[in-house]
Length: 221
Image (cartoon, rainbow, N blue to C red; front, top):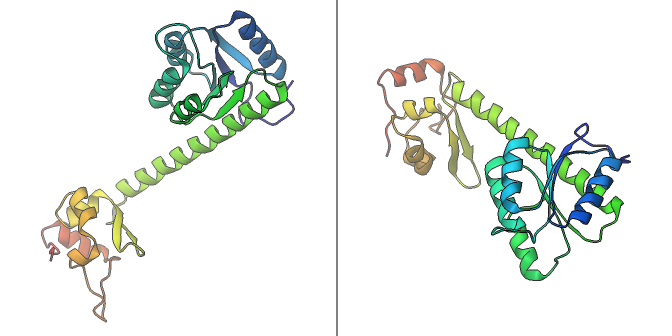
């Protein structure tokens, strides 16, 4: 039974291991630690198919496998297409192998023979990191939805870099240009509404926005 708190109840784990006895040992340990094993495969090709079919929360991936692909190639495809966290569980620790593995942004790298506690810590850490990444992605998606559906012109300005870093569709319509051109222009290339002291104001009144959308267009210098 697990001794650490997991962000997911009974996480579903896919095991990719081509040594039968080792695979059986991993499955036994995972079950004892409270994880749910959704499959065990011995080739990289089968790993990709099983990941698409089962959509596990985590994959334990050996690197040297049967078949044309190795575990690193399978992990790269799975991370790219499915964004499922992968922990390498391998006996290979040479510099070249590690360098290739790191390019796939794994959530862990555990060497065989492994201690059960080391594997548990790696799994719990991977699940926690993946949960945080998912929350960030969801937060970014909510932000994008709010920005794009806002009735106002929204321009995010980086003072340090003196440039626009984000705009919504209303801003593009307001300045009668596309997003790429507006982001590339920066505040020094447009003439927005001016405050009483002559300084630029990007918090333009709603009435002015309505007028601009009707055809009264600020000009690009």
